[in-house]
Image (cartoon, rainbow, N blue to C red; front, side, top):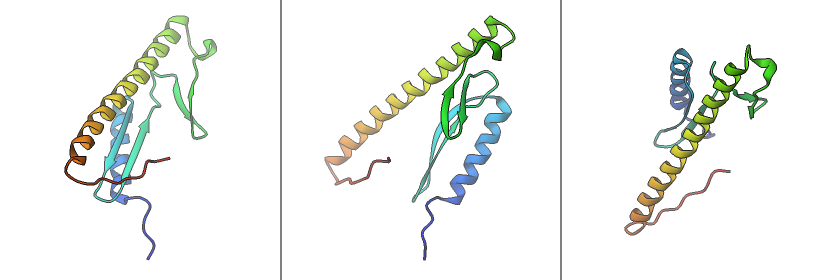
Amino acid sequence: MELNTFDPKLKEAAKEIETILLKYDIMATMLLISPSHCEYLYHLNTSWSVLRFEDKNIRFRSKKEDFPCEEAQKFATRCTVHAITSFLQFGEMTFENMQSILTQLRQHIAIVYEKWK
């Protein structure tokens, strides 16, 4: 019997969440976790951002010719930088919180895990 490398429920949930993100034109990064798997979602493509997924890479593109005026370009660029710094700060906060919890738990139980690559 071959084990799934993903949880179908998590994939389905991620698709539903992405529909909501599209509806409200918002960015998100999230991690969905089931008892046996996890699924992460990067939803970056919004109407107000210059950040895009292109060929499985994240690209920041803010070219003058892509905008109707300089003010629109500045607005989209500022909004995108705000999103990136927000993602970074949330990631750092999550790292610090989870690291603290693991440190406390390790005083009581052995914890072994592999880092993602």
